[in-house]
Length: 186
Ligand code: GRF
Image (tube, rainbow, N blue to C red):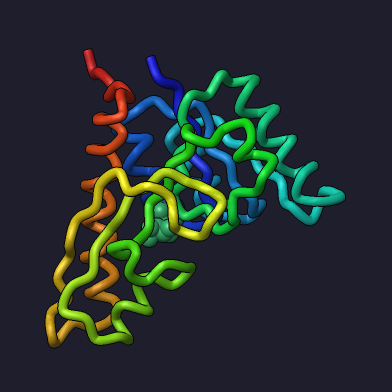
């Protein structure tokens, strides 16, 4: 059985969707006040949090992450709104075992504002991408992507909501495809 950990920095709605369908060994947040930690408590999922600024440098921070991942024998790291670039230290140990979700159709609109950037560019469609993580920003090999329409009278909120609904559909599908077993309720 593949053991997964989810990394998230903020709201954690993707984490929640995943945790409702799969056993998550733990969630990590690099922000101590992130709402994802509240969701973890409500869902009964183990949670860890520490911040980069509490360490001498990114290497030391990522070494602590590796210790957590090893202790929990994690096979796949699922980034879901983790707002940091994965550094060399973590990649050296886990490259090929880290996936990310991006709220646009890569290589269109990489970076931290994929939804707003697509909206402001006036596209008629954008999308959602799930990809392997490498040392670039949203550059790793694509696993799956779907198109999501943007309608002429969409507000940014309406468009963002459509993107998020597509994310909630796609991430569980990809996890299942990668061999993560769904929870059984028997
Ligand atoms: C998602 O749109 C994800 O694609 C992006 O950050 C957002 C996280 O939302 N990387 P949430 O924290 O899962 O609610």
